[in-house]
Length: 377
Image (cartoon, rainbow, N blue to C red; front, side, top):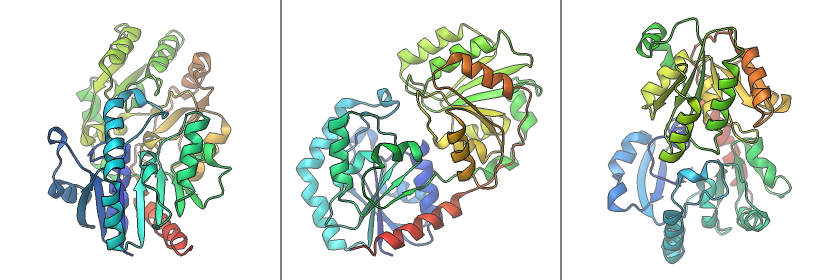
């Protein structure tokens, strides 16, 4: 298959990067990449991209591409000015992109991210990966649906991403993020507990990712403060990630110097693996049920979950996680009392911390689906 994958960003960290990187490394054939043209201050070389994404990358091309995360969770972490600028540049230069695709005659063109929807053109065998949960108004939804109908098919990261567009008649696949957590098996848990001065008997709850209102970090900290008044087991709440300075400051104020709340800052991939090794539960705090990358990384690390939603989301997670069967506790979104009850149910139940991988299974499922849909005329 002659295939090109179009990336929203050149970023070399985060859930989207981890997902597409694992896909490319396990896809089983050569692919080209199309990445956004960069300004001098955020330049990432083609050589670095090829090295990072692995030996299956044959060529890397640069074009002006749209990048839009408006109406998505945690959008406050992004620069609206630069997003608008990227869109204007794409509109001015999109003929260059389409002329290139016309000459290359790719069997399949995969757009990896919702922000790339303006690229969709029914002339080409395109699919789009809906990695974010749409949370906008009717006009924005109709605009996206107009473009999505021009795709050959849409891949949704989970049921929440699919739900706003479920009435649209379009071939689709719900495909959870791939993860490879086998690296945690070589990490010494006692060494990492000692590194962070945490007692081995503590129940360790962790929030990982952008520190933002959309992610509900402040809400979780407030609920954890209430939990600390009634808990019967020693515990720690780890906050691993970065975000807007003003909101980080607000969260620290809510924490009020509680010694059981540790702000770890942005961590490297290796450091994050260490956190999965010692965590008993990964916490999610969004205002609606969302299954993100940290959910799968947790489960394939042998960790449990405390996640917003009801038994429906619990069953969806179990269905998607293969052999991993861990403690999963749900609570009513943004309901502090409900979250405290979930934390009380989880406390004292330690996790196994045995890493597994879903990367090969993910790539095989992706390949089978694409082989089916590109035959549609």
